[in-house]
Length: 493
Image 1: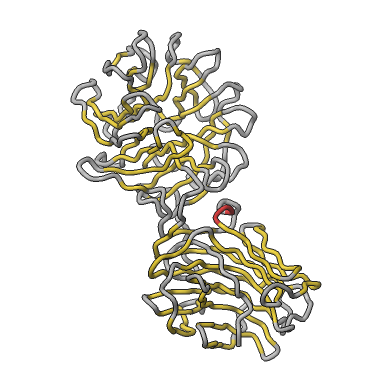
Image 2: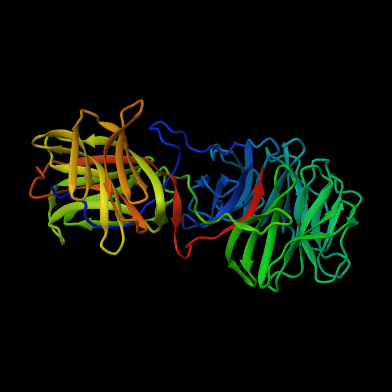
């Protein structure tokens, strides 16, 4: 029996095995928040410190940039142009309850929490030049802290209450300055030629990381004592702009934005521990999740055969529909649609996805499948839920063998694993995994697909709808070739 889903494409997702596996939460220890074009426009994302478990928090069609954690990790401040100009916003760490803080129609950017997380310090060009300002997170008590004709930018708040910032006052270029929380006693900390900017306090308030040299000509990350002494270089690469440093919570490592010098639209994120080589954390890593809430649509491509089959993200699910008037067609004379990723899985992997039968007439002739296709010949295997004249069942296709198990489940989880040259298919029975089959498979890099289809004239021409959710890669190496996205301006909590 040949399965109906025959065309290859790819997919990706995350979480440990189990139908009720929890999604990553932004309040977990040692997480990054950053801005990314992964979803098409600029959004605020969080991830684990190694770059895994990426989550799109803001999901807004406007540009959301320069995020920062509150000290307690419960909120995130960021800038967005969703009101027509860049204003400041605060949201919960899970992306909920977004509140606009500034309403001045100026360019407000680079917010940082201060005052027991009750206020924000930020840069603003309100009035014509850049100043460091402070405002309560409820929009109250807004004040200009610098009041200087120079350009004062990139504020960073110390746990001890001080503020470091970049200023070109004095006419000798950009340098790092500090001041008290109320703006008093400004003091210049750096004086080296070439410029220094973008300061970041360490978790103790005793050291400051910063960017040295001129952006576009190659920059590096340095640290110094809060007094400006004991300068040390911690990240540098020829022909690169190393920007936006942030300290790890324990103060031993750094995350930063790495770009081709002079090309700010080609950036990724890296972490480095002094004495070790930097690690790229923008590369996709397992665990990886797609909850089908609109944040990862560029990650997928769509394949259809025949007419009348569609895949649409609706209400936090991927809904696959075969309309009653669907017509078979294409190379395999079937009606089917599936989503597959732009990326491939290399070596061993473990992938799963939840399904729910929304409209499922008896004996409808449809297979809803989680599938893998590998190599130039698209050698595949799949786990599926189907309805045929002989009954309702789970199925497993591992060439050239089809195995089935009767079921009345209207919802569940399908799972695919590749271990060396062995494919394993299974489903979740509510308390444990139930193996369907295992057998030989290709070891070539694989794409994973989600969808539904019908062939061999078995479709009964009644509408069928299946919802997919929580598509996840639990383990495996994800290869995306040249990334279509860039990540920048990290903050580490």
